[in-house]
Length: 232
Image (cartoon, rainbow, N blue to C red):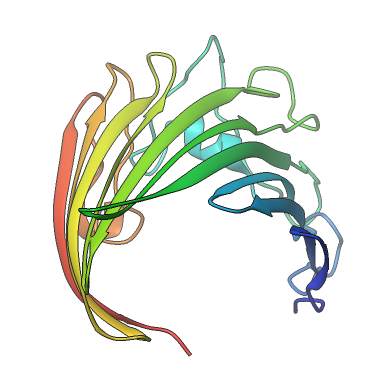
């Protein structure tokens, strides 16, 4: 269950906060998942900047980074045992957090309107309760450079992202969108993921191991998406 999102704005500056209750806490308390996050935005004319931080309790991010079972990536970063989740009697709590800062600028010119932006993110998965052998923390920096150009009812979005270290990945995305109305758009997107030598990044749904099998370290992944977007 989510608590209501709070928002206050003063002269182009706004703040939003969100907290999710521990609805899925188990009976013994060894698993107690909840989330807390906040973001601050500042807009002045064509420029905008945003800063955010969030924390996920018992989301077990290190289990996906360091495990040998179920097609996992194997033991990484000097670990001698897999990271695991809790049991009904033993708590192995995790606290995964991430912070990011982003800035963007709208450029209006004779060929349309171009939006350029950049974002830097630092991910911090931690599992301080892990026994000797598994990882207890990790740091994963990432950056993103989105670009969008609009001419009339047509949009041309694109961008590139990168996550550092040999266990990371880079990707590039290109797209086309056509606005059918002020609230409706049809779009076509192409995305290519280029994993580093030990990276195993893939798409969250179509690329999951249940659908496409395990992603080999260093393998590339690409996808094309066609869809509609409606806002109300």
